Image (tube, rainbow, N blue to C red; front, side, top):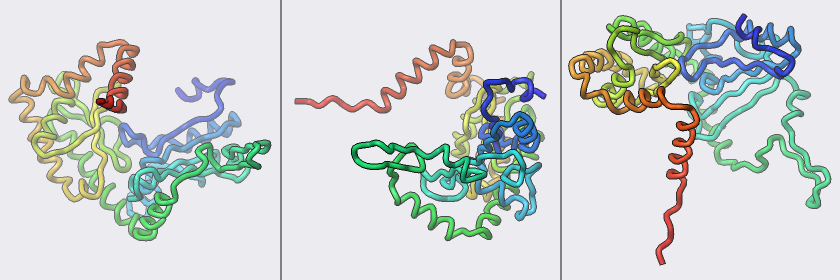
Length: 289
């Protein structure tokens, strides 16, 4: 109902995720597809994170909560990243179209260029072939059976961790851990700060959690190495919560301080600060004569 209320004459497409990056929840793609078809607009499914997990969940014994791909009428495009759970090198990404006719809109032409007729399937033009070849090699190495096996391990561990989160005093799940991500935050009134817990968890076991906001939360993207250490993660998370409770002053800074301050600042100031950070990251040292 909320999405329907947002559609107007300026809406050219809807977008759903399978799963969302932040919480790991698979959006109700079938419902979005019905809306898109009724309004005669496209529906893009962002499957970048789950492209090599969600399609194999049924075969791995843990089917996704609903359809998400071209078997769903109304889905017009799907994106997926082999460089994530496809185990390909960074930079491998795929955009799929329901029809050749739809794909034509992505083509770029320069038919009157003095260098001759130029046509490319994307706006990027030339691309290095090494990443494409390495992606092909990774997919041949794992094959369907390999991806079913990795999915079984990853989804199984994700759900075990998700089941354990509510048993740890002061924590609660954020969203629904449908595939390969578990997000959690501090319960209201618990006295905990999830960013402090994440900092402590890194200190205890070297775990790197992604920080989220609106609402305040952190998430763990479960990989094969993580899946093999799911029990250890839960035990160390429980220990981190206990440590933060016993030493609250020690963990007031770090991520907790950064995101606490950011929530009170105007967006424009944060954007300017981000520009300074990126300028610093990309600055070239001045030559000394």
